Structures are given as structure tokens and as C-alpha cells.
Image (cartoon, rainbow, N blue to C red; front, side):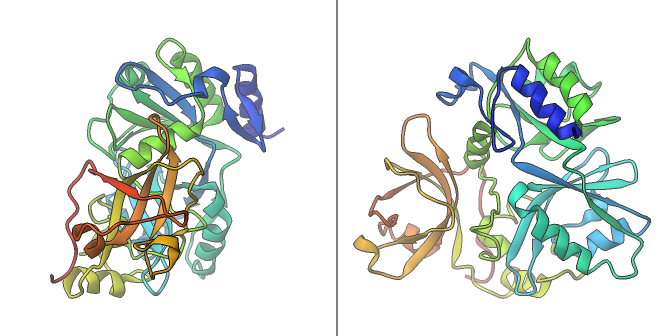
Length: 352
């Protein structure tokens, strides 16, 4: 039995219902999304996979592949990063963290194999080893009114700024965007069990769907299979999420990303929207400005989760002109999107 399987068995004993080797729910606690101003949640983030990167050329290799300045990553600073195609479209979005001399890429499980395979193609003679570490290392998400108090029991110094880390070997605690306070714990599964045991006095166990909802409210996208190779980073607001460095050297797609920043005119960006629908919208489907999907697509759904008030909340990439003109934006079943404010300012790239 692998460490990951032992972890799932442990969670099952803690009340989790396991389906397809993931936590489906924790019973009644998952019936409705928690009011995090009053409560705190702890969620196994088993939708994420882990790629370990080791070897003396690791920093140079990653620097030449990703959109951000990997040299700024340290044991106390993590980083959102995009891996792009030569055409400048985001293939995978992930968080990079560092423990000792080793880097880790935290990414959606469904993007693991394609990302790992592509990265290995470019290792060539570099002294770099890339491995799937998902069977040894995992993630917990903690959010809510008592989240900081819980973190204070785990590490000596609690990270205060978004993307900051506290590292107490073998545990990294990462401050994640969103309110109330959010933290991701990254470590081996043995240490995750210890963290889980400490969380019982502070938090209610829930499934990863709660964390996905909080990501959407924070305006932080996940690039899944349905949206891979669809969007230039600026369309996903990645320049507003500190996931792009325009002063670093070359990487795949860098010319396209830089051209939009310095010379182009950005026509689409990501928005937060509510969809008052009985049927769950799906990531990757087109959005329209005319009934019955008769017109040309004006955007796509990136991520979507159930909303506490009913219906669904989603991150969507939509034509800027359509939103600013007040044009209706509709799903394929003609349900209108109601746009909400993102918790950060988005600067539209390029010459306007």
C-alpha cells in the first residue's frame, strides 16, 4: 500500500466517503458550503498532483520553461506559474514551491501526465530529474475564521502575504489568496496526518469542492483539460495574480505574451459570474451573446462550482467589449450570466 493509499484509508476512518480514490464528501458537512466568517474548514486537496524537480540544473531548467521568475522562489516564497505553448497559450497553471534544493510543482491531477511528459522532452543534457511525487506528498487546504490560529500550532512563523511560505521541514505552509484567511499545507502524508489530527479542535472536514469554490471567489483559475491551450496568460488575469514576469528571459510563448503586454490590444479577460441554472455548466463550453447559441462565441467557462445561494459561480473568459457594452452573455441553454466583482483590479494589457 502506497503512502497515498494509507492516507485515504486514514481519511476514511475519519469519516470520509472515498470514490475513485478521492474524497467525495464527509457526509452532512458537505451538504452546503460553509459560512467561513463563522466556521473553519480543512479539506484534503486530492484533486492536485505533485511533480518533484531535482538536480543541479533545476533552477535554470525551470527558468527557461515558465512564465514567472523562478529564481525568486525560495523556502519562504512560492509562486504561481504558467507553462505555455509556443503560441503563448497556457497549457498548465501551477504553484512552484521549494524545500531545500528541490522544487515542487503543484498542479491539477488531470494535467499531471501531459505536463510531466512535455517537460521531460526538454531536459536533454540538463542535470535535472522530474518525477511524479503524488504518491509521497500531498496537500491540505485550511480556510476560515480560525485558520490562522490552527497554523500557529504547526509553524513558528505564520506567512502573512499571499504566496509567502513558512517552512518547518518537512512541512511548507503557503498563504493563498482569498478571504477569510486561506493556507495550503504541503508535506508528506505522515505529516499530513499529524496536521489533520491538530485541525480537529479548529476546523470542520470537507471535500475539495469547498476549496475550488474559494478559488473561484478569489479569482484564481485552474487550467484543466477543457481549457488547456485555450488562453494567453493575460486572458486569465495572470498578470494581476503575479504569475508573469515581463523582465525575465525567454520561455515558450514568451514573444506572444510580451507582445500583448507591450504592443497588442487585449480583447478578452477573465470575470467572476453567477449562473442561475439547475444544470451544472461545464468548463470549456462556449458562451454567447445571442439566444439559442446562434451567434459567434464571446467567451468560455474556465472553472465552475455550486454556489451557497443556489446556482453556480464561475470564472469565465469573455470579450471585454461585450461586458462593457452590457451585452447579454448566455450559456448554451440561454441562461444569463450575472457578473460579480473580482477581489483584485485587472489592468487590460496592451495599447488601448
